[in-house]
Image (cartoon, rainbow, N blue to C red):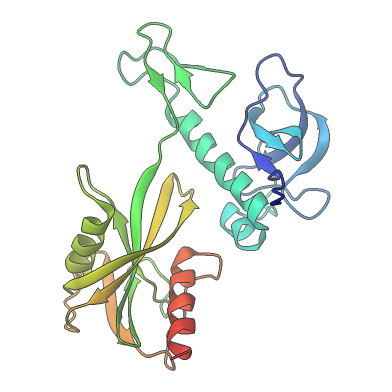
Length: 264
């Protein structure tokens, strides 16, 4: 018999009739307040009036609330790097829902102020009936390989010595696999052969869903675009540059490839 456990975080909104009480997350202007137990959750209690419900945490409602905060509160990226998976999912949800609520206060069809629906993540316009849901933008992130070697690139915004995998948004009407081949060719001029799916990761800055792929290069010649990509090069498993953080799907792609070639 298979026993399944209930996840700590469930995206099931408590509804308008539920008392506004439970766990909550304090969002400041530049960071997120530490909770009593070292994570981001404040102990169960009455929520501030402006708190926004997010779902259920360990059987109790959970919400987020904005305030001015303190400069010492760690930024969201720092929290995501060290939180356990379940709390990381909760924070990612909070970040995306917060951005959606901020950016969809008015109807995109007629300009009337929108109203939040209590039973789901949705805004509705009472004037024309238009509904707005949180925006999710799918994008691909790809590790290009040639045998044991890895093609890594440095975005112009990266720290000086850090290199990472290639990424880009999926365009309207495009499949994820086509986006992989297009982005790789546009950014580094490399043609790719076989493309295989790895896994996905929510990346809430502000609303991305990263679809991870491996792509086999058909050639090794690199021609960077000179716009998004400042440099790109082939690296061997024994000689690697500074890599992205361990919690990122980019690093997971790299580590998975390194583990695979080490076993050959």
